[in-house]
Length: 223
Image (cartoon, rainbow, N blue to C red):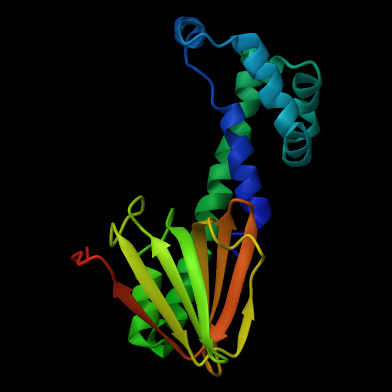
């Protein structure tokens, strides 16, 4: 992935730590909600911070590190100083995200006319949050994916994707059961190059192929 990389996705996950309730009343209501659910708020904060500590230290500037080490980043209502630092970081972060998205859209528009129609369909009918159910390799140059798109933005049922004229293919053993996060497409001499960022675990699926066909299963109507 050149644009939506693993690191950018990991940074996105920790960005929520710098989004705070606006008032102390909202903070207290949040604590009360956890307690009503039988959840120890302080313990929950401690466990979450410990689980994400390395990424927080990796992506956040040193000005935030004292709050991470002493556990106050997510366990206390933020001070004015912390809120100011967080607002600045989030502003810069959101600007970077917008710029990356704009760069990829420009890249895609520059190659769109070179792509087969079904590849354009693959790009423009988002598969975000689709679950990979299974795959087949019926021939040396053919790769088939079955996806559950019921929790996604398009199709809303199972689909079968058949990649034809496959020249290169790479995926991890955990492909089945993983979720489709983001995809990037590049023009290739033989057709197109597809990179997909997957979650569960975080990994990348890539291939170079000549074309793809998308078949909606279970009698559903395309969206």
